Amino acid sequence: ELFAVGEIHNRNDVGWDDYRRLVTLFIFRAHCRAEVFKETQLKYILTESFWKDPVKYFQDSGQVTREMLKYRRKTRKPLQTSAFRCIPPRVYEDDDQNQVVSIARRTKTLIGIANEIWPIIKDRARAKPSRSC
Image 1 (tube, rainbow, N blue to C red):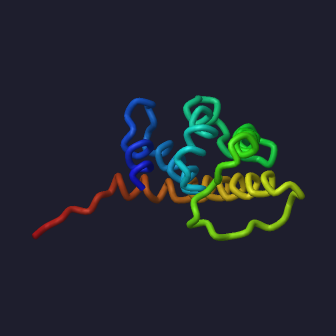
Image 2: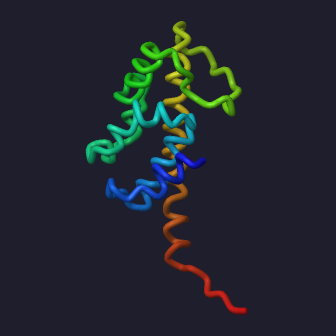
C-alpha cells in the first residue's frame, strides 16, 4: 500500500492527471508487485503513446505483456503477491506465459473498470456536497 500511495498516488514528477493516476493504480492492483511495476510497466506508462490506447499494451502479445514474460523468465521472481491465490485457467502450455497472460488480461479488465468509473468520480469531485454542523 505504501508503494501505491508514494509512487503512484502522490507522485508529482511525471505530470499525471487524476485520470492517469487512477488507471495507473488499477494497473498496479492487477498484481501488487512493486518490482514488476517498476521493471516492466512504468517505462511504458510514462510515455504519451501508452495513453492513446493502454489496453493494447496488455494484449496477449502486447509490449508490456512481452516485457513481463521476459522479466519472469530472466528473474524467476513472482509476478504477483500471495494475495492472488488463484490458479489461472490454462491458456498456454508454458506456465510463465500462462501466468503473464492472466495478469495482462486482469489488467485489461481493470483498465476497463477504471474507464467506466472515471466519469462518476469526476462528476462527484466537481459536485462536492457542502457540510454543515
